[in-house]
Length: 470
Image (cartoon, rainbow, N blue to C red; front, side, top):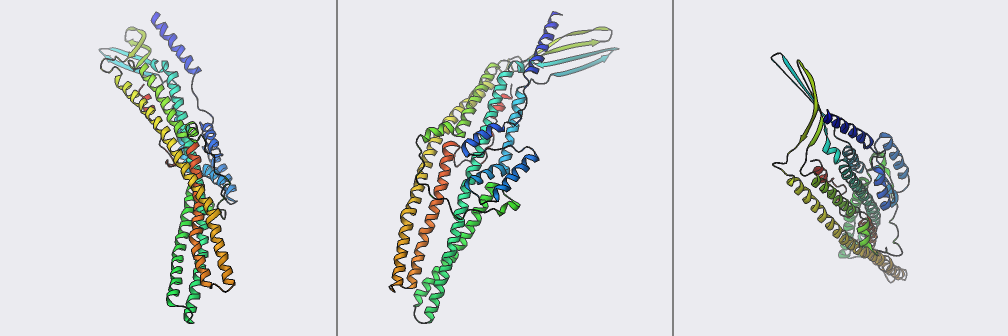
């Protein structure tokens, strides 16, 4: 009777503890932290669209943004609101949240019932068992699950930052392609005029056949270049459509006529490498994974000899005999497995996380150096075309026009000069585009993630799998 009383008190205390410390779901599903991390790096928060009302609210805001020509900021906001793939990635938050809540609750008790009869005698056994080991390790398991949820939140923010960067780069690419298509239309018109004029002058006997063929060749090349430029404009616009998740009536959006001007000065990238170590989400994620696996390793070491410890109330009824009450304890005896395999697995997982963290940090520093070099090169080239190459071509054109007005040059020399400008103007537009894309990559590499990372990363469940063995 004394032992039975102890079991009853232990069960009652466990019930009180479980009811007092029962984990519950958070109201926002863990999205607030994701929004905070994303807003700090993109300037725009994210919302977890869990209901049709959430989707309708986002759709109305997107429609409002698309009424005006897109800007880099509005493109990012549309991508974060409208990209269904990103919302699908956010579903991982719900899974991690459920794991956290489950880890914070004691496992359900088990009930067993047995009935034997024979010879006019019936015997009935009843047992209710509770996972005592789970109760003892509940705080540590809850802490591990909380860290895993935090890791998933960082991963979701990383996906959002990647989607925002892709939207910005697609936005600049679409504008540049649209601008180049318009310019090549002008070149094609000039080539048509030049070719037709050459044909008529040859017919009048004032132009050689070779000179006429040269003008015709220029027209042929201009026609081909225009076709390529038009396709490029369509392809870049469709890339932007995919980055923003647009469809249906949303496709009627408009773009600015030209790219933003080059900034007066390049970005100051002092302490860029340290900024990457402190703020990059992939570094933070690797660090969190190492911390979570360290906790999981501690839990495994603490329970290495005991994997099953259950206790509960039991009674037995037999025909003709008074009911017998008592308790039952189930303990796994470590005769063949002393927990060495589980511990070895946990240790290997931890060291894997440590080495991966070091690798991610080193790669982050390298990527910052590389992207900054690309950024400065793109900035200097764009500035070179803006301040030297394009003005030089303009001065040459002005001199040719003066010579034409003074009857020192023919109209074909003017057209030849326009033909020579094609390469410079095209290179200037592409250099400005490359600058804005390189600027986006640099900002992403400093505070977000690897610019070359895939848009969505699959969650790592190694730590959770290891925890599931307890």
